[in-house]
Length: 217
Image 1 (cartoon, helix red, strand yellow):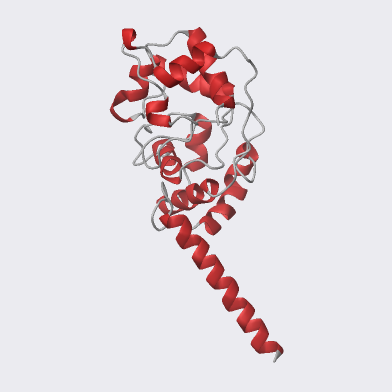
Image 2 (image 1 turned 45 degrees about the horizontal axis):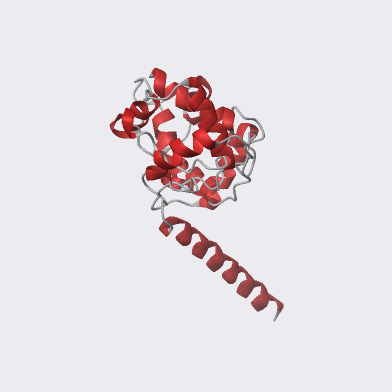
């Protein structure tokens, strides 16, 4: 009787794990064939020191990964990865080294795991967000500057498979990435979209937008 109970419990646990993995693979923005359970083990060994075990980094230089679209995370990991000795599409000495030993399947699994975690969002430090809110929601037609919300949504949640979640991110990290796009230091944006947008922004506008993004929900 006890043996039958143990076997039943194991079967139910396996079914629940399989169902969770299947749900993760079929959710919007998911990466087909990914396994968040396996991704959790890799994340604990490779990523947790900088991004924390649940993807909610405590250091502003290291982005929060929790709740980010898996397809976006997978793309970034592939862009950091060096193949055949070529220069990676996204250059960062630390990240290039961290992903060097990951297989394509490993990257899919890690992306699925962090995507399944709950984001602990940051807060805006300034209450003077009129400029940022105007740019985020409406852009500036006189400069050919599109509204950020057009791609990332009113709440900064992004669009799975296309645009990342940016709401609740560290202001310092968002500011650094916008400047990197503007300066051409980061160039892994499809069709140069972010580089074209950032090129039209001043330092003050970038700083205001980055702070606004930390608090947008």
